[in-house]
Image (cartoon, rainbow, N blue to C red; front, side, top):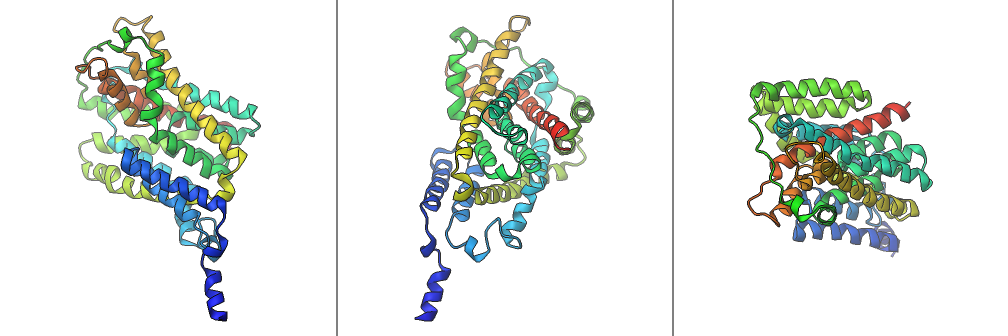
Length: 375
C-alpha cells in the first residue's frame, strides 16, 4: 500500500486544477482549428501540443517542465529565451522571399510602413492600460503580425511576458483570413476593389543580388538594434538570389525553418501555463493584440487610398492589408477578397510587395524599441 501511495503521488491525477483543464482545452482547440479549418497548421499544431504538454499536472512537480532548470524542455526553450530561434526563422524567411515585386514597384514599400502604425498605436495603448514601457514595446510588436519578431523583442525587454505575447502574435497570424477581410471591405468601395494594377516590370538578376546588400546596410543604419534579424533575413535572400548557394538556401527555407518552427511552437506553447496565462494582464494582451492587428490592417488600406490621390497608376487598396508581416497569408487574403469582385484580377504579386516590406518594417520597429530601451 505504501508503494501504491507513492506511485499515485507521482501521477498527475492528484494535482489536476481547473486552470490546467482550461489551458489544455485551448491547446486542443488550436490543434482542431489547424487540422479542420487549416488555420496555419505549421504554427498551431506545435503550439497547441505544447500548451497541452505545459499544463499536464505532474510534469512540473517532477521537475520536467519548461521552467525547470536542467530539464530537456528548459534547454530547448533556450533558443526562444535568447532570440536564437527567431533569428534562424528570419534566415529561412529570407531564403524563401522574392523581393522582385518590391523592387519593381518600390512605392509600395510605403504600404508596409503604414501598417506599422498598428505597432506604435498599441504601444501607446499599452502604456495607458498600465503596462510599463518595456512591456508596452513588446506588446506593440504584435501589431506587425510577426511572431518571430514579437518573441525576439520580448525576450530582450519583457521575458516574463513571453508566453502570452508569443501566443497572441501567432494566434492572430493564424487568423489573418478571418480578421482582415471585413476590415478591407468596410474601408473600400466596390469601384476601388475592381482596380486593375499595371503589370510589374521584369527585375534583373543583378537588381535581385544588389537589393539585399543595399537594403541591409540602409535599414541597419536606420535601426542598428535590429541588426541580427535583418542580417539573417537579407543573408537568406542573398543565398537565394546569388545563384551559387542554392543548396544553402534550400536548407534554410526547408529543413532548418521546419525544425525551428516545431521547437519554437512546442516550447512557447509549453510556457503558457495556467499560472502565467490566466491573469488579467494576459487578457489585456490579447485585447490589445486584436486591436493592434486591426489598426495595422486598416492603416495599410487607408494609406493606399491616400496614395491614389497623388499617383497616376492607381493602387488597389485591397493590397494595403498585406503591409502586416504575415507572409504570405495576408497577400493571399488580398487575392481572395479581390477575386470575389473580379475573378480575373490577380493581386497577389502586387500584394507581396507591401507584404515583404512589412517584414522589414516590423524588424526595424523592433530595432527602434531595442535601441532606445535595451540599455
